Image (cartoon, rainbow, N blue to C red; front, top):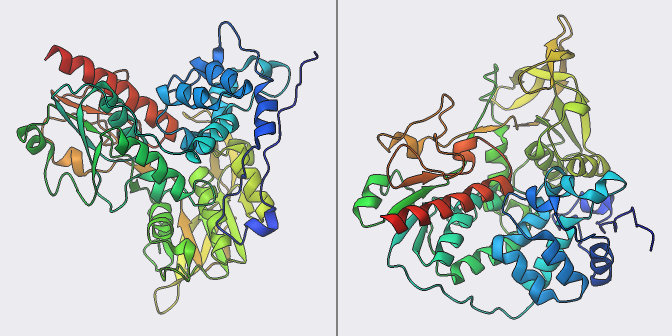
Length: 462
């Protein structure tokens, strides 16, 4: 049989319809489509795709079971390594990881591993829930700070080992960035909560409204009898450009903008009366995945114009290609090689316009991308109603500030061993964005998995 070089296309909502609603954009494979795509897998003897997976999923194993219609076996293989498969199938950048290693990608399109993962996980969500078998208790307690992807993964794996695990989450809803940072149309909240329910069923206790660093500090948790602590508090401190007028009303960080919409349920207005009034014209500064999320969200909130402002060219954009294409299809505009230098407002201190400057590209900088160089005298004014600054986040400083002896990097991240998550403090481990800086969901999950294994090794020797 000749090799099928093309993957099964993912059904999506019509662009002109979806730009006005918060329903999920990608609709998922049907069973026949999933089997068709799974049949493309060569089941390599030395699968390179597994090497590209930060959480070590047996990719050929779950795909082979799917191809044979053995969905229970397929989800079992997936969940052996990945505690959040329905999440990863939606937001993991497979094209840069497992799919980038797929041998089929050398001569055509790689197997759509992420789409198959989503299909199997979504099938599992429709089945009658079975409480997972609990591990034999080891009679030791571990505290996990933060319920984002790193914390959830570490907690689930530790529970599978047999530890008594408690997650402390500062907000009123568990999930971290999965809940407050990613829009409903990309990652539905009910999907996240069902994944978290699975982790609860493993025996993990999740304490919300629990701000470690305020209600207790790390040292107090250890004094209360926890045998180890894992810190997974992420990168929730927004970066700004320190421009004139940045404190005007209507200038948001992407964190605040998306959190107000996601956790205050502005996306359900008028059912929940927490709208954000974006006005007619919205500018989003930056071109990463978060910037695309903000720009696409602005359209759904009623903006007539939503524009990405980026000081480099499209080639340097850090966002996933799929997110850029979806944004374009929905009508997001792109003003490239330009950047704001000042915001102006009215008598009520509301932003009304911004002064932008044009740029050219010079030699590559430390990131490998060509350095943006401002063009003197190229400034121009643009009327604007809302600005969203999406240029990255820094580490939440609360835990580092309240944990003596914790060595930090120059940027304020916790310094931890890359393979184990061990910090300068005995019994204290860390992983995810609080260590690496802002990265992807799957990389944070990989860090949580490695740390859980290291905590287990440490406590077994203690």
